[in-house]
Every structure is written in C-alpha cells, then in structure tokens.
Image (cartoon, rainbow, N blue to C red; front, top):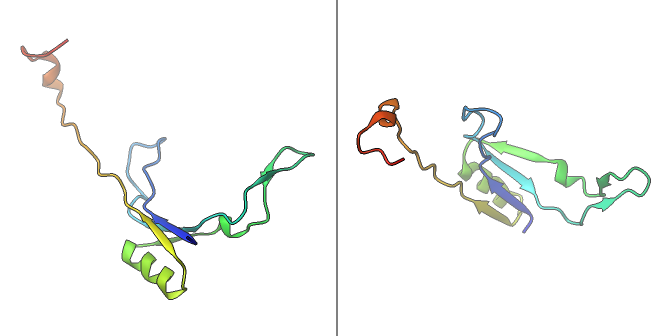
Length: 97
C-alpha cells in the first residue's frame, strides 16, 4: 500500500468544524524513523512522509491515486453521534441524578 486517503478529524483545540470537509492523500512510510544519537531527534531518509495532498472529494483523491498507479487505502470518517440537550433538561422532574 503506497498511500492512504482519509478525511481529517476536527481540531481538538477549536469548537468549529472548519477544514474537515477536504480529503487528504498521504504516503505511507517506507522505512522506520531512527533517533539521532547526538540531538535525540527522530528522523529518517523518507521525504515522501512530508507530502500531503488535499482534495475536495474522496473520488478525486482515488482518481489521482489510480492515475499515478498507487495502491491506496481509504479510511472512512466516523459518523458523529449528536446528543441533543437543552438547558431545561437540568430542571426536569424525571431527571436522574
């Protein structure tokens, strides 16, 4: 598998869902990262890991991977489960404490 295609998750530091509608194609690492003995940083010789391509839809990302002859894995996003709440529920008579 050369690339993976996924939709990014919501940023945990923000309450909005901006920048989560695009699909990202990124290359899988070829070799494991190694620690530098002198500085202690991790790194490697694989420069493809730094490349991320953004697409407007999943179909465009898949079409690009097929056009370039790359094997791909699509990771579908989890569906949000909304819990509808209202302030009045705090004072309901049948509220479980």
